[in-house]
Image (spheres, rainbow, N blue to C red):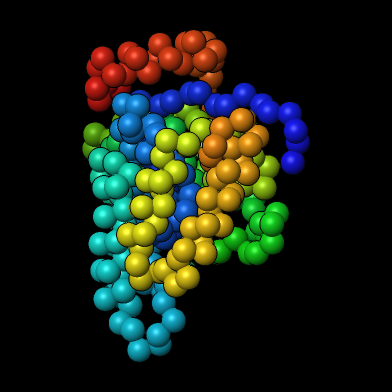
Length: 266
Ligand SMILES: [Zn+2]
């Protein structure tokens, strides 16, 4: 760890979308940031590509029962974080593929909700820096999200039937990649770290030694917070596709104030 602290990241979108492979990924991922942004006036929507129907140890478990339970858990967690809605794309857990069908579904989600920013995984990560394999569904969801954001969502001639039927092209201006091996922005989540843990608690079917896991997560948040001199932070690799006219923190505060004055404004 460096002893020098760097500046916390201040930009905040009016609308953001979180695109993940499984129910619970968003809560292990950007839940602290999502809750902080929503509390400050942003609107967030969550998209789960699968319903986690392979996320169990019991071979006798009916995958459809598990999917139903996990969707309920994710809806409860999403309420805790404050998302305005959740979409389940019902793709098969463990078999997610970044194909044209998935990309079209994600383009529909993006063009309908019209987010300024999208959270997803980092598709370049196969092996995490701290060890461990990045699950195949995490990689596929991340790659599909990136491909849906750029170029498909912003190109009216990508899946042209969408634009012809009212889903106009939309420019997502930023991608925040979670679980990256090369994070370059740190967002203060000191005020929402507890909410992230509370959201994780909603995923009861996935929790085994939960207190140990929560302690590890809190430790990681604190370690990342040390980078920016706060009690807790989440780290991302940021990809800026379209710069704001003024990227200074002061200008971002003004944008945030403006978005609160016009809720839901495009
Ligand atoms: Zn997952």
